[in-house]
Image (cartoon, rainbow, N blue to C red; front, side, top):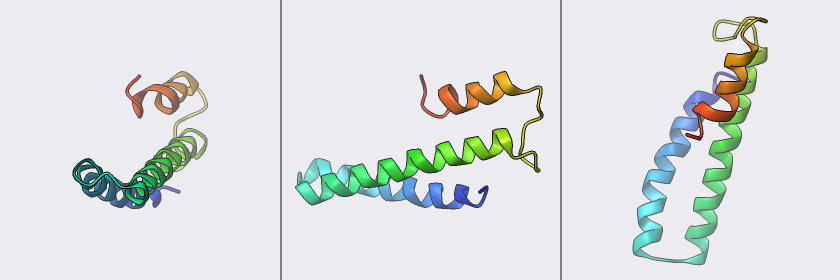
Length: 80
C-alpha cells in the first residue's frame, strides 16, 4: 500500500487544478469532482497511515509505537 503515495500525489495535483477552476467557474459537476477527489485523497491517506502503523515493513512502526501510530492516523495528516 505504500505505492499509494504516488496516487495521493496525483490526486493532490488534481485538486490544485480543480479548486481554482471551481472558484472561477462555479459549476455542479466541478464541485462533484472536487468532492470526489478530496474523498479519494483522504481515503488514500487513511489506508497509507494504517498500513504504516500495522505494516511492519520498511515504513512500518514497531509494536511499542502505538501512541505515535494513533497520532499519525488522527492528527498529523489532517492538521487538527
